[in-house]
Image (cartoon, rainbow, N blue to C red; front, side, top):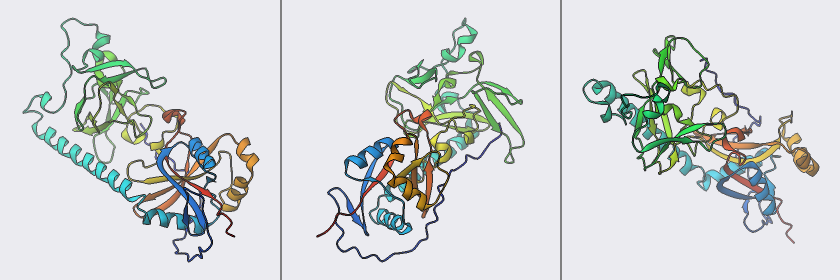
Length: 361
């Protein structure tokens, strides 16, 4: 499969890193809002959808942040850093990624060294033993190990999914993904592409489209967001393994992210947030929103649109404007429509509300 880099849609706002000295005398804010420079902001660290963010800001007596001044964004960022709003989240996520990577590498090294010396059950949960006489097309289901089961997934159009009956510990390797191996690229949504060299010139495919030639892991569906993802898929020794990334509770469906960069040919054309956003090591907070069909990227246009209340009603479809922080750098970027994966509730991130300072007599 041809790998494509996911496009990032950037709201073009160049922020100059400058410390502004602002006279903040006589600035009064409503209850629940903080005085930051000459502005009044309220920070909501529990993630909400775009529509919920707008509603909450309105009920609080404010609105989403009006991006009308560079220095406002600068002061807002400075305040979030000083208050530690971004530190815990980014550090925690990086530690989780480092821990996962280390475990995966150690597992792979151990597997390659000992796979011919030890039985499969010492490395992962083996397939259930097949009965002597069975229907060939039922092979994949019949390989489901004890303690797991295949049942209808609640995810729209996902079909059947793989579930657990019991609690599964973090970093449990569920097994090896089985299928037909071939050299020709097809259109199967069950095919992994395995690169055999660093230059990615040699490759083969593991195709689990046939239930008669695959195992139960073919039923693990695509996660709709990073929070419900509980399985990580990785390649080791030209094989694909599935491993839990967290403790999985009983009667929970296993879900993994089949991204373009993971090499699975799903043929998905809808937009997954992980295709555009770094959900693991970047801090995101929603500042504002814009109509989806807007053409201009300047602050003046944003200010004019936001002040027109009738525009808000007429443009029923909006996208959010996120501020992101990664490795000491800030960037404003667009939040697209991810409801195909997130459901109608939408993409949940922390957000900021703003209101005009109260008159001080």
